[in-house]
Image 1 (cartoon, one colour):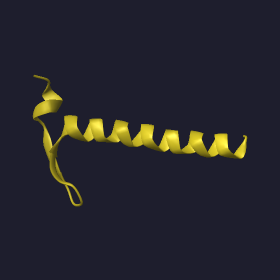
Image 2 (cartoon, one colour):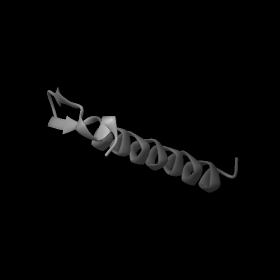
Image 3 (cartoon, one colour):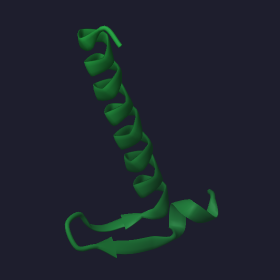
Length: 46
């Protein structure tokens, strides 16, 4: 088990979570926004 799987913190909106879960959520969030931007660029022909 990694140290970041055990560390926890509390987010006002999401509640308690491990650092590992937060990192996974952040990575997904970044990929999601990147896909949105790419989709817009494609639609606009940029």
